[in-house]
Image 1: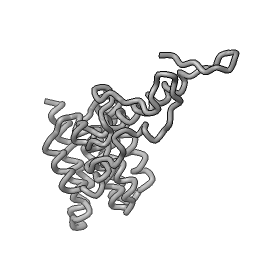
Image 2: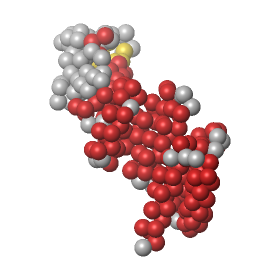
Image 3: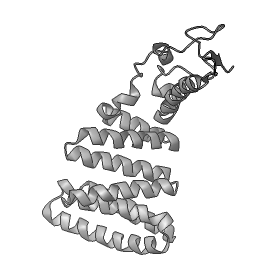
Length: 227
């Protein structure tokens, strides 16, 4: 029962702060009172069980400081909330914290930074499996998610642009087995999320580095290659 109450306070405080900017002066005072009461309880729970509640307290505090114009302090608390949720594997609350941070930076006109947070939020929602939120972000923030929603405009085989020394029986342009290295020209939707796309790019880069370091020269100056 106590857990349900605390989660209600957490989300209720965030909902109140979301409408603060458009509220009348009298209503703003009521919002601040309700949020203050919720934060008092969240702070107490965070003191006893920081793993479960500290990031929740930090996120509400970030939103509160944001609407009160304390920008620098809010920035710090958004990052603390995101870090805490991630460290304790609250993927859904990490997603929420990233999304709210993105909206905060958008309100400041800092779209480039907002884009980074919104992409992180999108990635978290994908990992969480929240299809409704994924669709919602795609519809409401296409300009921020454009880098991952559009197909990556990269060559199917980026290694083709980097010549590799060939041995006696080797081609100048060794092929990449598609079952090991999928084409990085695929869209994010093909991979499932942005993290997988990055891993694919890293795998291609790693193969080239391995080929480069496998080359050694013996005492006579003749080049040899390990298979």
